[in-house]
Length: 140
Length: 401
Image 1 (cartoon, rainbow over the protein chains, first blue to last red):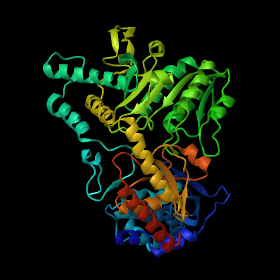
Image 2 (cartoon, chains in turn yellow, brown; image 1 turned 90 degrees about the vertical axis):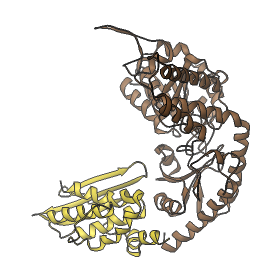
Image 3 (cartoon, rainbow over the protein chains, first blue to last red; image 1 turned 120 degrees about the vertical axis):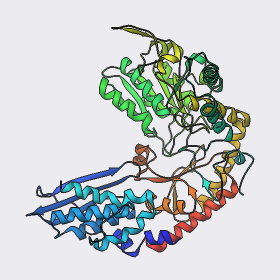
Image 4 (spheres, one colour; image 1 turned 60 degrees about the horizontal axis):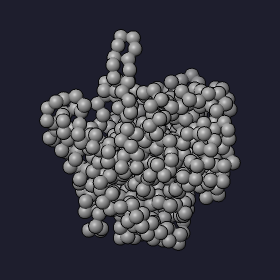
């Protein structure tokens, strides 16, 4: 069952159990986007605060499976301090990687590379992408 | 390898795959597949139109199926409408009957056990007409009872839309008694029989239901075909739901008239191959007989539940299920994590809200796993399933869930 072990990497479990940047902030300078997946019950909200083209803060809230929760947690850690354009590029690259599509290997996905195993579980791609899609929408 | 006397008829059963997802869609026996192949391979012609041999045979088989369906549920031929599935059937009732017969202040009784297809059409109709949705209180196990129904029904109740068998909890609703009460209040009863029709002999005369809906694909038949039964007097007064070819009687520039009976509701080219396949699935079920089906599933279900009860780290939501539907979660493991493990072990079960979010809310859960047993499942398969559950609990524990 090596595939499963590759999916449930230690880093993922660590983020699932100790989620970073969890909880929303009531402040109109934050942009918020919420995505629900009615078939599985996942419900994730991402909040970002960008100023002068730089992401100053990124928050997450919701419930779902370990993959969706960990990917939200890792997302918020990676994105703080990034330029908005850079962040969009990282998100796009990540989404392509997990969906087993061509992706730009020159882009550093940092800790999010732990989700490379998702591509072998097509039914879980949605789990790993939901927070990242919501994140992209907060930047629109 | 792990087969019983029926599983050999299902070509989908092969290798080490274990199929425990009949509540989502059943497997299809060879006879159903052959009927579909016969249509596409030999006939492939439209119905009610052509005079050539293939067209005549297609029409004949199509209408013969209606008789088979009618006999199957003890209805009249002109009370059996072909639809795309239960969802289409229930939408047809809501929009053709509900929209024209409900007004502000009328009440529609539903329950938290409803599949979204038995809830959302009525939610929409309530919104459009100003009628009010009322929910019959479930008992502590999540069941609909006659007592609770008596408490909620009133003179304002015009429609009762309830599930016959819950697709999450597997309970059989005491439908006959409920219908008897509902009729004393002159309300019309719509039965969602999607999960009932493969388990119980249904007699619409004995039940006295006004509408009853089910799908082919959950009863060993093809996808894309469903049935709506409706009492003839109600169907006659209803407007068509879809307009187009084959459903009209006379077409003019300004106004047109419609065919009578079921054809009024069958606009356009219907899924003919699926209709032909449905006939074979009904014949297959009839050949076995409901008593045998019920006994087999009850025994296997009981066997499964006894083992479920002694597994640590598992929550079972419906130990009293009346059918083969088992809903559960591994403790502290989100259902979509758990299901990946079962998929890796080639066991087909389902995770999520099962298109019935209100019962998940009622249970206080975001989602759950569901296994559903049917005639082609075996004790040996259940043994493997149970040992994989135990393994999975250990696996996820080790990961730190």
